[in-house]
Amino acid sequence: MADLTAFSDNQLDAIREVGNIGTGNAATALSSLLSCMIHMNVPTTELVSIYELAEHYGDPLQTVGAVFVRSSGSFQCSLIFIQPEQDALKLVELLLNHQFGSFIPYSELPPEITDSALSEVGNIVLSSFLNAINMLLGTQHQISVPGVAHDMLSSILDVVASIYGQLGETALLVNTELSVEGLDDGRRISGHIILIPDPDSLNLLLEKLKVI
Image 1 (tube, rainbow, N blue to C red):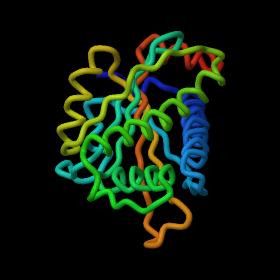
Image 2: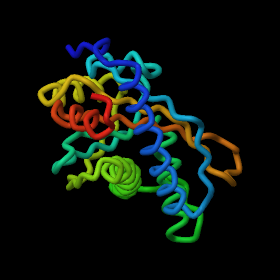
Image 3: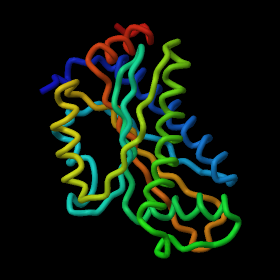
């Protein structure tokens, strides 16, 4: 398990700023996708062991929608966008209604349509997050085809730990809440971005930020 106490305050501050920049870029991309204002609270960023991810979220039995991508290239990492299931479906509804110009409740959409739309949203959010990091570091990347999963939070995070634990034990957790302007019910849409850098990529990140 990664010794997270080994990071200095300067290193943690620099990594948090990377998370803030990445999240801001993702929110801007989502705003362009939906053609509406996206309000974002101040993101919190922390480094945690991937085996302790479940402790940083809510009810482990909560059903969530998750989009996974893998990035290769100069900065190799895994990224996950996790939302409560109802928030994920609400984003899908907003996207499809914007594209087709008419209101279609997500409850009336077949699963293959909602998963395709969720994959598109997640891919844009995660790609934009990663683009900001690569611009900051001067690196390049190739991103995989997104994968989509719907399951209990604990089940998804257990899979994350078992798969990505082979590549690195430290996750960069970015927590933020998004609110979409103009929703009739005034609801807030929350989303969590998890960045799991490969060990060499985390070292590269610290070197580029000149905090190693």
